[in-house]
Length: 84
Image 1: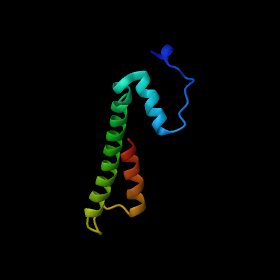
Image 2: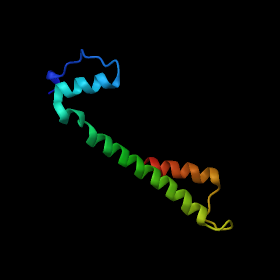
Image 3: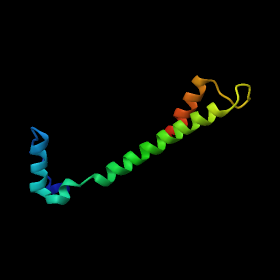
């Protein structure tokens, strides 16, 4: 509960942080937030994958193809598609 959180603690090092988290929440406290972190990292993988995939598809077109974008435009478009 937000009203039960003690905001006065400080963590001079990583080991002290882990000790204080363990004291306050036990073993489950050490894993608190893991789900959100994994979801965020998975989303970053999808974003990077779509960026890289678009660039590879663009590179596979023949040089004289009307669908081939120049490198600068391809990077710009891939970044926009990857961010969405």
